Image (cartoon, rainbow, N blue to C red; front, side, top):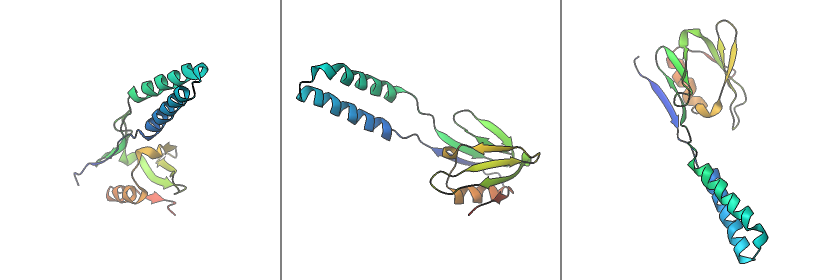
Length: 137
């Protein structure tokens, strides 16, 4: 198998847009009700929201080939040799999965859940590369 599995999750701007709508609503309220003592608060909120919009949002995801699992592949790549992984353990399978990599020498490392695809896809990709998965409910 020479396939490289890549999972990329584009950043969302939902919270930023919600903050912008809130700041605009505050500004409209200050103008409509002539609350001039709050105008600096409204403009300050607008400035902070616009600055927040300009901040870079890195892509989340992982990359798996025949020899390595690369965590945070597009932010701060950290390759882990597949031969060093004893198994991958899944905890709570609620909205925020708890995934832990267990190494052959016994050390454990939690994985940032936003970097990972859905559980079924991850299990399939890991099984194709011979990495056992445990504690899946």
